[in-house]
Image (cartoon, rainbow, N blue to C red; front, side, top):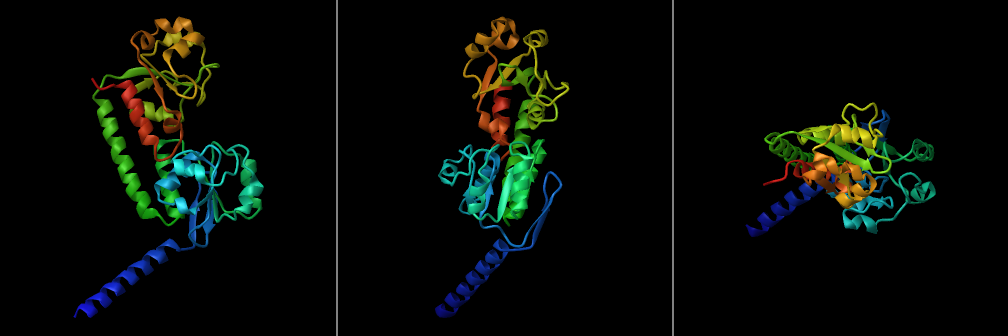
Amino acid sequence: MKLRILILTAAILLASCSRENKQETRGPITRIDDVGHSVSLQRTPRRIVSLAPSITETLFALGLDSSIVGVTDYCDSPPAAKLKTSIGGMMNPDVERILALHPDLVLMSGSGNTKSDYEKLASAGVTVFVSYPRTLEGIFKSISDAGYLTSSTAHADSLLRLLRQRTEDLVCRAATQPKKSVLMLLSLSPIVAIGPGTFLDEMLTLANSDNIAHNAATAYPLLSREEILRRQPDVIIATNDIVHSTDDILSFYPEWKSLPAIRQKRVGIVDASIVSRPGPRIVNGLEALVHVLHPSR
């Protein structure tokens, strides 16, 4: 009797493994990328090159670290990403090094990588998929796309449910607080702010704030110091790759000491990697913005 149970259990396990292996090697796989290319794979990719930190983070979040054979110099999260073979920078990847890795799939960013590198890889016969999210939902779609292309749909769906629930919780929390006007800086000299048509502008709105550059003519407007004095933002947010303290801001613009944000000590320095990378940590970025705009008492 025990022998029959053991045989039956083994058969069930083998059948389960067979189903999993079949799912992992399914094909063909076809998906339209964010710039309109129809991308087809004959089977699940086993060798993937990522050309953007956000994409690398997505692949790791989907448990695909063993399939990643190449990353950029800027792919530093999670720490294990730094142990992968580097193929150079985002704007100047070494195409020959990428080809030498024999990738089944190269994942590119529409904002950080170049069209010429896409064309070089595509003309060499490499399968390339471009992600170009410009909204929070677009970021979630890029995670879904990565899951579909790698036969990790269930894992991606689980991750997305968690990210969407966290987003909803943060939006509800922020909505209970008074709305603040905010200036978010990408550069201090010259003064470059977050403008319309960007996922960061959307996140500021979700965090229940009025972005003073929301109606600018460009996505990343160049503002004058006088314009900021005129607008009197309640809060200033800057990334930690451009400033480290309020003093850094005042060293450039001492007259800003009259701004409500400076007088009320409402200057927030946030981690650039969690607010600027359109990957799974973007909800951490939204949480950081909500915390700066609506600190807990």
